[in-house]
Amino acid sequence: MAKTALYDIADKNLQGALASFLQSLLADDNISAVMVPMRQSGNDTVMQTLVTDPEQLSAADPFSPAFPMNAARLVSRLTKRSPGETVATVLRPCEIRAHIELVKLKQGQVDDIIIIGIDCPGTLQNNDFRKLAGKDPESTTDRFLTAALDGKTQFDEAVELPPACKICTHPVPEGADIGIGIFGMDIKKQFLLSAGTEKGEGLLDRLGLNVQEPPDGREEAVGSIVSAREASQGEVFAAVHEKTDTPEKLAEYLSGCINCYNCRVACPVCYCRECVFVTDVFDHDPFQYLRWAKRRGKIRMPTDTVFYHLTRMAHMTTACVGCGQCSNACPNDIPLAELFSMTASHTQNAFDYEAGRSLEEDPPLAVFREDEFAEVVEIKH
Amino acid sequence: MDDFEPTIIAFVCNWCTYTAADLAGTSRLTYPTNVRLIRVMCTGMVDPKYIIKAFLEGADAVLVSGCHPGDCHYINGNYKARRRMKLLKAILPRYGFSEQRLKLTWIGASDGIQFARTIREMVEEIKELGPNEARNAAVV
Ligand code: SF4
Ligand code: SF4
Ligand code: FES
Image 1 (cartoon, rainbow over the protein chains, first blue to last red):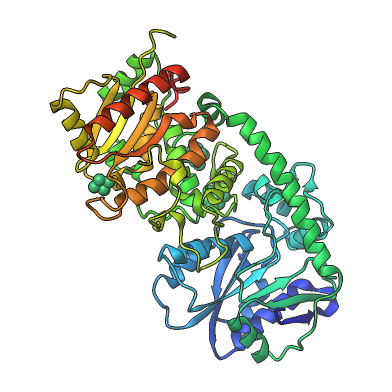
Image 2: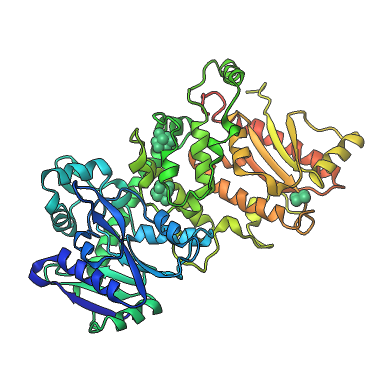
């Protein structure tokens, strides 16, 4: 059983308690900085911020539903080589899992960070976040949490959780050194701190917090969230499958795509430095377009759209963590997260792999065994 | 569909299957002309996107064929090819490219007969199956 502690919330002020918890991390001799989502001055934007001055942490807002990017990309920037000091990074479960994938791809490491994971009740896409925050930015997080922890997925007439969050079956930060738990907790009184690693246990000890068991309702609360998510995942995947089960239907699903490649830029696990689709390989000669058009009587411009998406599926879905940033980044509202998560469930299943589950499991396309997958070889003699 | 002549794109490794195809030719074995051979140094260099592209361009089937396990001239290219085949079989059929259109075989350098037979059987099977689902849809 992981070591757990309860952190008291003074004056029903969750934000204040989180800020003082983060300040106590900065006060630890081993931690030089904290990276945490923070309200940016002057507007309602919330963005990851690397903080060394404890005073600044009063603007920390780790439970804000804002999710402008998957922070695994930022953690990778901080850890591609050892920074020489330790940074505590506050991350959502899908950000932790994406970071684990990047570590396995040698684009980051975990030695110089302490991962503070949060229970994630969900996020909002950029436009929706702005709609919700617009009215009263100060209270956005509180309003969101109150509704989300009550099981709501709709927050305003036009603001609801994106599909990626509705179908996410990993709401609890597995793999974190310390998790901040709010499911099944009375967040006017206490949040839960649970150490998931030795590093986390050591830190809990140093912080001098009383080791306490989580309250009774905790496990049940998590269980019921996960089963609700599993149910909607099944429904969503079935609906996407129905819409894409022929090449023509897939093309129709993607017909609004303008090949801007924002989805792969936003994807935390699209790991290539330069995507082949932006290289000269796809800088076709003008005559080529005409040749294609002549062969079929017409050709959709831009070209190579279905090709791009199928190739991306082949290249990265074994690492897809279902964070939904591809959908969030798409200027044409193509429901990519569902499509990629569904494909990921098949490719990860094929290799008995789960993205972000463990640092010990090799990425499926990076290894092989001599004796395996005989079923895909046609003639065996 | 009697007059349907499938187009099969075959990625064959230089050292085994290509040599086998060559041998089939020099031994005057006959096999259908539906196949377009693409010689690659090793099946380990066949990126999934080559196969995807072939299907989107209307190929009715794709064959990847190389050395038997243990015989790859680059030691393990064929094991990587097998993983990629596993991967593509988890993706393409979901989008309506039937699984039968995608094949991996090991055909050694001295096995011209096996090569000719494989192509014959494949052409028969794909004739039965009909044209690639993406052939007439302008899907690229
Ligand atoms: S494909 Fe989409 S959902 Fe999957 S990891 Fe990338 S951005 Fe996240
Ligand atoms: S972000 Fe949207 S429009 Fe841009 S390439 Fe991706 S799917 Fe296409
Ligand atoms: S050289 Fe033939 S499969 Fe590698």
